[in-house]
Image (cartoon, rainbow, N blue to C red; front, side, top):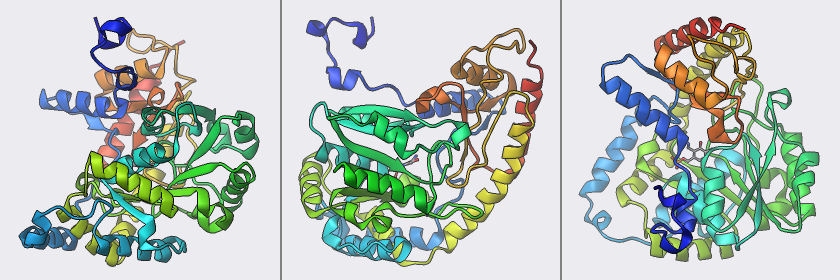
Length: 409
Ligand code: PMP
């Protein structure tokens, strides 16, 4: 019997934690790695991380920091003062948002930033509007903090961008906050300045909080531009929490440094919470973060060029497949094709009826790992990360094309 199926009185796992689902993205990754370990040549489009190493000068800063005994000790829970200053300076440089270092809380990655932010503002039953397709962690961190996620779906026909009308239709007396992310994981959608502003004004009008995730700010392509919500809508600043981190910009996913920028009372409350949960973020990683943020943006410029080339490689290949529709992503490093036109058709003796079943078939038959849309609140889609080398990308897409070309009636 599973923990979830055990009657409440005998349950060993709390209802709050038992309700959390496994991260499908990590599960796909684990399954693909297991197949690889067994000698199968699996190409993995699953990972949400750049395939570049952390730049050397940042690694060197960490090596030096290891030798400094001050870093062997506890430091302030909110973050090293030098890092909070560097984050405030970087925020002004990159998005034009002027904040004080005291408005910054350094966290163990963007994930903890999101969880801490929701924990600081949500009471039980508070609703948070989460545009879907959503990054799989958002609804879970809302729930963990006692809130109720409310999906608003935008499909490929809308380039995966929700409108103010849709948000307004989802708003109730209990709506406390909106989750906003642009560029988006899993779709790569980037909202225009006018769209960002309209959404910000709607939030101000209804006195809502907005948690805005800016982690992909430097990964935008073509004519698309990143715009920071509290910069375009300054009236929102008192109820705006910006989430950001080093993971995607400096290829530092494993270092675990992120942050929130929020009004003082939220930072104070979230710091108190963090002081009991995890205390300070690893000092060595924080020292490396100071060096990263104080340096230039040439490393991310190189990655951006590579990702731009790769999206232009894989998206046309996806659209060549019958039954597959994929808008061109304008940011991040994910493509999010609809595969609704393939579902229900016979492929190698099987008839996948959901994107979970299709992803399983693709892994088994084409040895290509992709993440099914169920992980992002929208069945009928697949997410492909294009943070992998050009040869693997072409080979993976060719295998996918061959397999799906077999789809019968
Ligand atoms: N926000 C988004 C939209 C993401 O895709 C990710 C990473 N997948 C994060 C936040 C968190 O990144 P990290 O915890 O590694 O800093």
